[in-house]
Length: 225
Image (cartoon, rainbow, N blue to C red; front, top):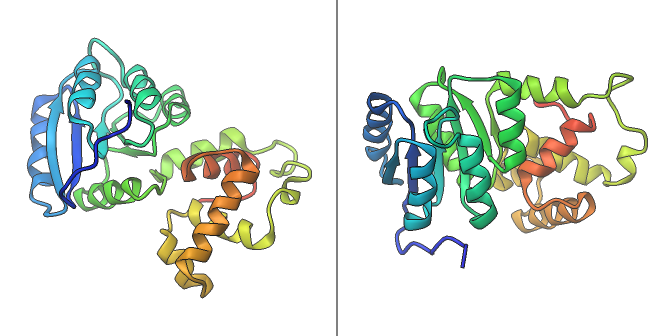
């Protein structure tokens, strides 16, 4: 119990959560035109989001932050505690620090602002579905500023944890590159990259690319700029 059901279709099953009906319907219509997506449901508040997630068990949730009855933060915490493999993409007008860091800590895979173009949303959904973290540039800068060491930007002894190759792979992952892209750039096989990422997870004690990237930014190892 608790893990999403495997879909028989190759389409990415998307659940939308947005309290503004006009905005939600507009996003729905746009995403439904994409052959790789199936919008399986819409939620107008946080409680409905949690309930529909349990009922529909989508692949990706696209949700706003500020919603009635239950905030996006509370909803995502509940959802990720029960369905950790569901990818969550935040799409909001708010870039307040308390929202950004609370949602990333709750397990969101991406955080975008509503000034993006529709094509960027499509790419972001594909990215988080593959396990790649996605941060709006404004949000990425906040993360860097929040966690960078005030002394010199690096935690003492940080590079002792990872090999040079693992650091290179992690730096490319922080830029949102897929395993295939990293493999192509480093002239390695995808299997080798997956092995490196597995070693990174084990050494850092994390369970996802998003957690690994946030830890690397926090310790000043990588830059997303």
